[in-house]
Image (cartoon, rainbow, N blue to C red; front, side, top):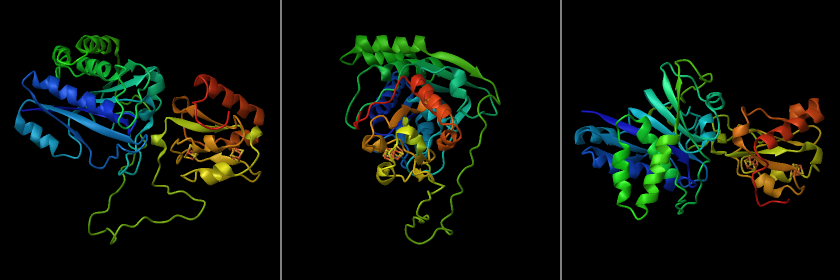
Length: 356
Ligand code: SF4
Ligand code: SF4
């Protein structure tokens, strides 16, 4: 008796349908092999919130009893693949109901595979992904993250390419042949088969040794048991001007604001509009960004009255969350160089609806 699971980690709203198609089609293909399967999402996730990291699982088992055991859990055990739909999620994930940023590979079974859709190389991704005590595999499916809307199915082939890659790395959980047979029954069967084969062939495997990767700084949040909980729903307030240190939402972000301090007219609008109170006033009247709490919504960039003063820049080109005004204070020219370098590496700013 055995069961294995594929965890599809995705961004709420934008990739909810993508995760749904992948998990359901994996299960249907496994049924063709006389296995048992089901899909399950975590009840604490909030996939209807923009960009919030969320998970959907495909559980595949050799028998019904094993499947039923796994389907009752908050997260199934024996996650043999974590498929990551956007490579900026490799920095860690904080779901809606789970405070604390968790490593992207936290629930990966020993010897499992982290599959990331990315244009980056393994070394760049491993700068963010914590080390594990056992060896594991980093699989990269070359491509851009695929984003859609709440009710939108973005038919760009990412789902079937990902499933092809999963067939390659799961070593028998579900075969490429079963996925192709399953796809043959759909309206675009020929196109789907091609996408499945593309993903199977294109995925690049990189063996990661035990202890290789970023430092693991994860400390699980201590949850109170029911006898320690206060009555009612209590959200402790923090002082005005401070942020809640337990609640970090930067893992929702696919782009972050980068400020051209030399162009800032100190109008305070960004400080006023930011929904997460991320702007920190500096003694000279600039506004620095607290990236630990910036959710990447882009409202500041849309609202800033100075064209090009706040640019949203792809999150993948940044490593840490340190505020940047200190760099500007020490050497404005060096800061401008850094800003230009980040923008160049990201291929320019992410478009928004503000002032150009
Ligand atoms: S993108 Fe701008 S407005 Fe949105 S949370 Fe970050 S700093 Fe605040
Ligand atoms: S909105 Fe723009 S110009 Fe105004 S304070 Fe913020 S960064 Fe400066």
